[in-house]
Image (tube, rainbow, N blue to C red; front, side, top):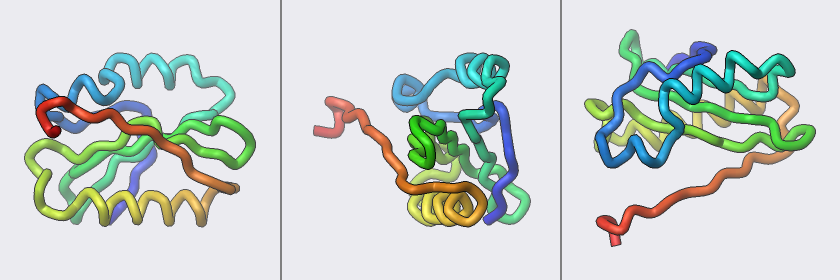
Length: 112
């Protein structure tokens, strides 16, 4: 996998997943105002195909919150998500002063 720094989400989500992440417009706006460079985002490529997006924001020194993470709708259910997340976290650990990662999740009622 290859990670490319990004300032916008270029992947497509399923309609029910769009509620779980920031909108593409919101992500662009965050980076337009992020003059302290507290947020980092990456396009995730498998070979030459864009397959995912990951966005982290530093909450406190060395504490990075995984704010938005998704695999493109046409690449889901292929085992890419877990592998890509491991790659992104390994990259973060080797390139940034990461002490810890944090995140949260939302659960859809349909999944229950």
